[in-house]
Image (cartoon, rainbow, N blue to C red; front, side):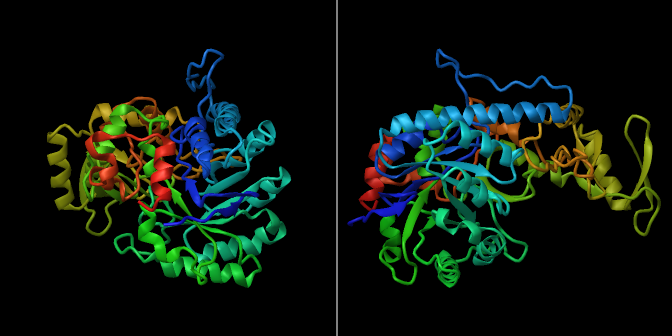
Length: 464
């Protein structure tokens, strides 16, 4: 197939965009190599790694006594890392392609981090992709630095809302609109309350609807980037040169994980080579409150079983909650249904002796060791999200969501830092797109072959 170039961030490039995966998973080396191959490389601006003068990783340690102090440290780490990764990417690209930075609007300190990195890396970053929430101010911030912005949306309704509220003021810097399929993409997904997570929808009519809205507001020739579930372009041939859809580029998030330049561990890469269909699934354990897609492993199994050891309770006898249950070291009584008391006693006998309260007036039963770890992680929160269900941190003036902490979730910063820096992959959160099982069946990866980024881009550009 003949792949035509497309205008992105002020230059004609291949319509191939590297997905900007979170914490250090897409870095300056991988994104710079993607740009050098003629496409758009995207490094993660979410707590990016920094290195000392000898090239050694600088561990992101936190010394602040309060969450707010640690939050300030986190912003400092993120800005320094983002600037450093932008420099690496720019040098690695050698003047080819385009370099984008990916940020999450719901990450802690998003606006300050954006300003810090774009100021410190002027001229090195050509575009900013931004999702996870409704990033109204991404247009204003990007335009202030002469950088194109690429909002990530999962519906035409979301784009219309963003356009009406903010984007119409900075239309000239709208580089493209990223449609991220909420059923097939890896990482956090933009499923709305009206959409069934078990019923994937065809992306074509959803993208066509976005194009119709873009034409309606006067940006009909601005590219749409199709993201989520894209593996081989010959499967999307009817999208190319399609007048109904207009200019289209394609984003690849999962396939770039398995390249020589990818910074993930060899253990992680080998795990990807042996996944089977169905090994990646949607879950809603994330402290963001969003659905996310990740490899089903011991980490997710533990969260699933923890949530299953859960019963509702009341502080006083109400309705069927008439049976007393002693909880905690002081034996404080709560009231549960008779059948639920039997279940609780069974779990306690199995060693899950600690009943932790959730924001939904339920009790979750865990071991003393798990209880201690959960509490420790909550106490050590550094505010990596704008609002966290797990720790109840919020970057508002009060510093809290006003709700109870949720022991059914986890510290996302801790597990993502661990897996990308060599932690055991079966016991950490491993984000991946739903097509990841295809590594095991695609002949390109036969005998465990791991390509360079250039080899992968050439393979994708050929249609396969």
